[in-house]
Image 1: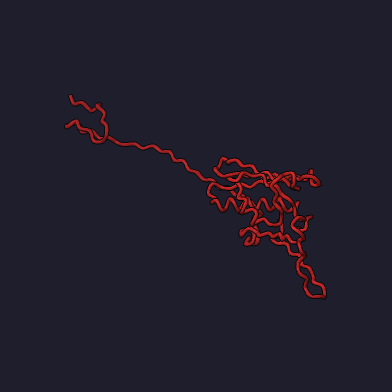
Image 2: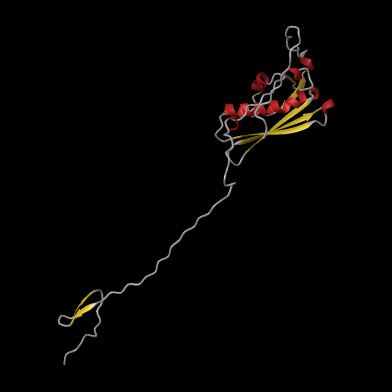
Length: 199
């Protein structure tokens, strides 16, 4: 089982706390060409939410080409495949990530999921740049994992019992018929015509 949280402590030096390192000039950030149809990707949103890279308009100027493709799923959602392809010195560094939305997801939920997947794919490529020391990666455990009850002792050691019961009844019934010879009337459901004849 993976730990729910990972904590790393850095001890400060004797001197006063130092400010975070300067990411340096903007041209030292990872240059990314985002190849995505405008109806699929909200470029303004990406630029606001993912600001640790430089976006370029020409793939020839990029260090990383990110191609986003889309297809509808059988369940009515959308599947986005993000292909991260390194260029020039990063040639050969390739990753593929997929984000799948549900049919019930709002436009905002789809945009947030696509943005998160885009960020995850960039981390490997942005880590060695000047933005690397400023990146902060967090893990939020799902609610069920955080509140998982402790395992209880099972005295039966996971035994499984099966109980089956059944019953079957058979019987016969007899009905006595009485016939009156005077009225030749039967009492009961049927009557035998073999009545005594008086000569």
